[in-house]
Length: 117
Image (cartoon, rainbow, N blue to C red; front, side, top):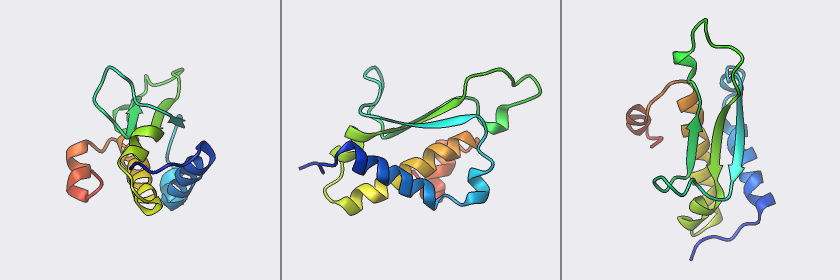
């Protein structure tokens, strides 16, 4: 049975995951917001998180006046694969790190190689 957590408890997991990201890396995040949504987009594959934006490695002198990149963490799909609170802590931590890595231009293949798939 999927783990049940209210919105505030799930938000706290995301905050904890952000707290585990080294500060010197968070300081490099530029023009990005982290959003928690209940569900992933219905027209795509099932996801725990999603990065939408222009990775830092692809920005050039023409990058200006754009809306912030968006890093999503999806609550319901995450909880659906978790049986315990510890499972949720692990999955949220992986998802947050994974999506922030996309902001830095690290692709899925490299993340899988590093164990953050």
